[in-house]
Image (cartoon, rainbow, N blue to C red; front, side, top):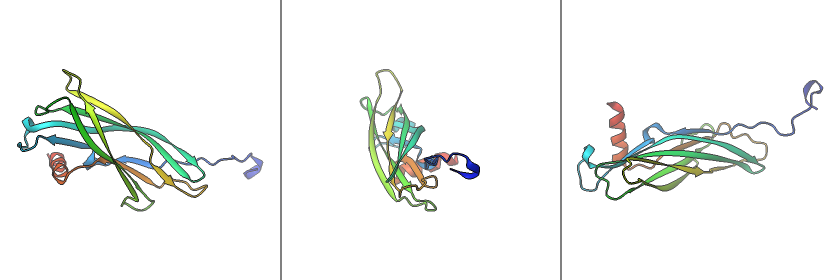
Length: 161
C-alpha cells in the first residue's frame, strides 16, 4: 500500500530522455565538386524537420524509439535523382554535454521525376543501459547532420544573415 492506504502503483512512471535536434546541425547544403558556392552550385539541401517517439523501459535500461523526419530539396547542380546524407544520434549522461555514445547513419533520398522535394522517415532506437528502477529523464539525445567543417561554417554564416 502507498501513503494514506492508497494502492501503490506496481511500476513507477519513468520519463523519456530529452531529445534535441542540434540547431547548427539541423540543415545541410551540398555543393557539386569543384564548383563554386553560390545557389547554382547546390546539388541538394536537407533539413531535419521534426521527430516523434517514445521510450520503453526494461530491467537493464531504456530504449528510445525515435522517428526522425528528413526533408530534402533538389538543387540545380544535382546529377541524377538521388542525394545521400549522413546524420548522427548522440547520447549524453545527466549533467554532461559531451556525448557518451555517438552513432552515425547514412540515408539516400530519391527525388521523383519532376519533383523538387522529397523526404524520408528514419527509425532510430538508441539504447541507454541503466540499473533497474533508474530513471532516464535527465539523459539527453542529440540528433543532427554529420557535417564537414565547410558545411558547418556555411550553416553558421547563413544563421548570421
